[in-house]
Length: 413
Image (cartoon, rainbow, N blue to C red):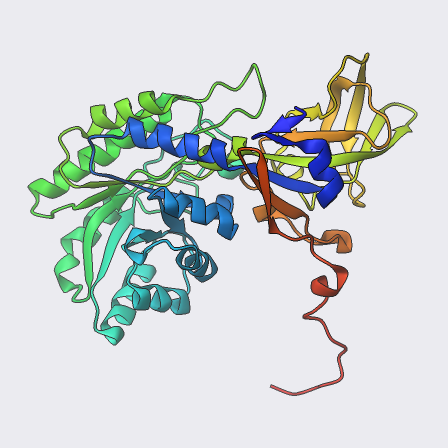
C-alpha cells in the first residue's frame, strides 16, 4: 500500500518519521455515511465512543458529520466539547464515574447518563439536587448475552462488571418517583466489541425490547434506548467478515420497529479502526536458534492490542514489488516477551530500513499507547485526498518527563 488516501506513505514517513499513526479522513467519513444511511428514517443519534480514538482532529471530523460522543471520563468530556460536539449530543457511560466527573457533566448539561449501579444512581440524584438540575438517565442493562468475542472485550455477560440485571432495573423504575432530580426514562445495552455476527445483537435487542414493553405497560415511559456499539471490523483480510451496516439496521428495525422514542448508537472501532495504519521501519532481522525475528521500531507501547488480546493485525510492506516469502516473529524493541505483533507470520522478505504498515490501527492504537521503556508517544497524521496534517507531534523526552521532579519538597499529610 504505497498510497493511503492519496498520500504517498514513503514520503510521509521520511517527513514525519516512524513509528507514525496515520488516519484517512475519507475512510472515516465514508464509514459514518454508511451508518447514517442505514439508520435513515429512524429517530437515531450516533455517539462516537471517544475511547477508540480521542484525537481532537478525529473528534472534529465526527462533529462536522453530526456525530456526538459517548464518553467515559471527564477528560473525554472536555475533548468532545473542545472539538465542537454539543453537550446535548454527549452521553456518559462507564462503571466508575466519580462524583467530580458527574458534577462536571451536569454543569455542562450533557444529554444523558448511562447508570451502572444503584450507588451511582443515588450519587447522580444527590449531585443533581445540589445543582438544582434534573439529570436524564438510562439504566444499563446486562442482558447476559455472549457476544462471541474476546473475553476481555465482552461486556454483556452476567459475570462482567458492566450494567445491572433486568430484575434490579425493574426495582429502580418501581422506585423512580423518589428521584426528585433524576429523570429515569432510558435503557442502555452494550454487550461487547468486535462482534461479527448478528445473533448476539439479536438476543440483546430482543431482551431490551421486551423489557421496554414491560416498563411501558407498567406506566414507565422510555424516551430513549441506547443500543451501544460493538460492530466489528476486518483485522484479518479474507477471514474477518464484518456485518453490513444495512443488515445491522435491519435487525434494529425488526426488534424495535414499533418504538417511537430516540435510539442511540455508540460505535467506536467501527468508524475508525480500518481508517488507520501504523507506519514502522524494520530495524533488523535477528536469526534465533528456533525462530526468525523481524525487529521493528514500533513496539507494544505504540500498539497494545496484540500483546493485550493476542489480536491479529495485517502487516504489509509499503514498497510495491514481488519478493520471496519469509516467516517471521514480528516484534518490537521493548524489553518484554509480550512485545510481539505477530508469530510465525508469512511476509515478503524484509531488510533493515524497509517501511511496513500495520493495518487496522485507527481504534485503540494511539489511544492506548504509553511511554513504557521511556519511549516517546508516536506522532499522528490525518490524510485527506492527497494532503496531510500533523495532528499530534511526536513527543519529546523533555515533554515526557515534564511533570517529574526530584524529591526535595518533603511534607507530611
